[in-house]
Length: 153
Image (cartoon, rainbow, N blue to C red; front, top):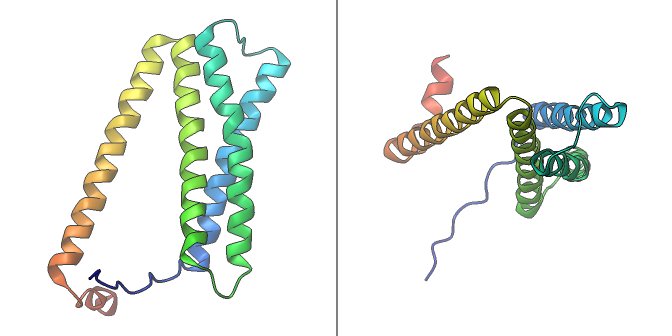
């Protein structure tokens, strides 16, 4: 038999608004990069630059879909778990495409800066994974007395 887990708590609307703001910034950044291409400030003269700009271009509609899902979540009294999953997938995909595209674009323009940004991004990603893993292990070890931290503040 499979163990029945309780439904996850809904994301607080203030956090949801903050996530929507970060997503908006990533989409605006992607649009700005493509405007620079149209203007001629960024040249798509190599296959790496074309790949980078393609990733950035794909990030825009994916980000718009995530934005619309986010608005639907904010305007709904009850949100099914699939809504949060789809939102998380679209947000992560949009942000990842933007970052990877920008790293490729920077690497094409200046390989040293591109390498520095790539190493810093990967290092910070592993730092995030470590922090989340430590957080989860701490919650599993402590059990149900997690809310004590909130009451101490």
